[in-house]
Length: 148
Image (cartoon, rainbow, N blue to C red; front, top):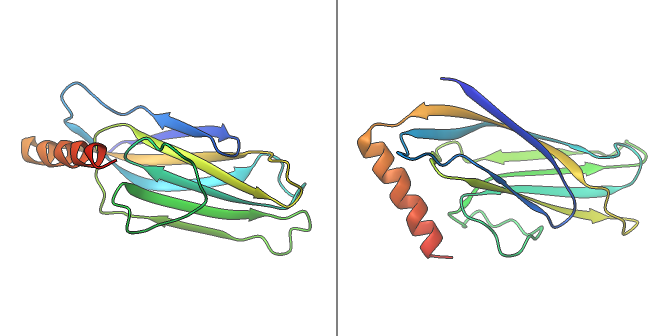
């Protein structure tokens, strides 16, 4: 199936909508890849947490809770000015298929207190949904919105 890619730059505490919703909901998506790069690599020491949700978030935090059924991916990485101890951790819940908009959040913990932001890159695999899959994905999204 085709791969769609999205990218952006987010400052600390920002959220961006990835527009995926269609009129009939017959196209589903599954996360294939997520990656990130600091806005100023190697310049300042900072930790970055990107999270991808099925519903819009009212607050952007660095807290990660895998029991949250609206969370579909997490990426954490460090940017070090000495580049000796950088790390990247990525978790994608690969069984999640969605057919509505998703939301990318970014939280930055900076050693100097000045956020520089970070870039994100996302690849989504398009999946053709039959009527039953479409109904299930849409109902799950509606239930997630109502539980917020």
